[in-house]
Image 1 (cartoon, helix red, strand yellow):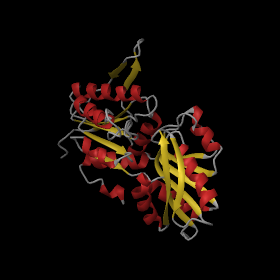
Image 2 (cartoon, rainbow, N blue to C red):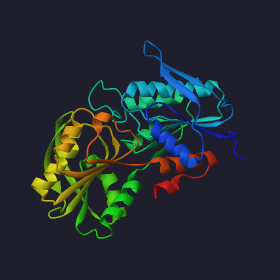
Image 3 (cartoon, one colour):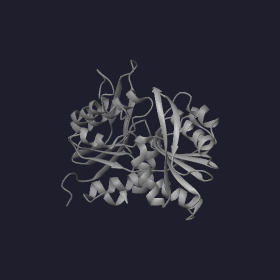
Length: 319
C-alpha cells in the first residue's frame, strides 16, 4: 500500500511540454488536464480540470528562458495543487534556474539558489527532482528531499556507441577547475584519461585560457560540462585544446543548453565537431545549429518518477 497518494498524476507547465509528453508516454499515463496561461497584464494563472485529491502529483517544469515566467508558473501550479488537496507534490525541474548564484562571490551579493529553494518549499512542494545541479551542495538549501539525477550515463552510452571501447586515443577534458569532479567520474566510467583546461576569468561571461593540464596531444578530446550559456568558456577551451594542446578533434557535451546571447555564433565558429545536450531545455528556433544534437532524458526521468511513487531507491539511476 502506497500511503502518500492513491494514484500518480503528471502535469506540465509551458517550459518543456515535449519532455513531459515523452515521460507520460513511457509511463503509459495521460498528461494531466490543466491550463497554464497569462492574464492581460502578464500575471500567471492556472486552471486544473481534474481532481487531484489524495494523488501523488508530479509537476514538470524547467526554469529556463523566460526564467522568471517559468518559475512563477511552477510556484502557482504547486500552490494550486496544494489547495486542491494533492497527497504529495513533487516539483520535477529538469533544469534548475538560478543555480549559479549559490554563494556570495562578493559583498552584498544575493544567494538566489537558496531563495528559489525557499520559494518552492513555502509554495507547497514536498520534494524536488532535478538533473545536474550546477553545484551539488544546493541540495542542502532545501528542507525537503532533493533527487539530483546525473546526465552522464546518457552521454556515456552515446560515446561508447560512437567511439567503441578503444580509449587510448580519446581523453575527457574538464573546461575549468570547477567541473573536475564531474569530468573525472565520467572519465573513469569510460576508461579514459582526464585533462583540465586552466583558465582565468577577468569578468562575467568572458574567460582567458591559460594552460592545458594533462596529455592531450594527438588525441581526440571530449569536453564535459553541466551547462552551456553564452558558450565562451566551452569554445575558448576547445580552441586552446587544438592550438595549445594539439588535439586532433574536439567533441563536447553538457546536460543543459541554455544558449543565450552569442552562443550559437560562437559554437558555429568554433573547432567543436559535435555538441551534445540533453532535452532538459527545449531547443528554440534561434538555437538550432548543425553542430548541436539532443539526447532524450525522458526515460531517466520516467524511471525516477516511478521509483519515487513506488517508494523505492532511485540510487540505481546513478550507476
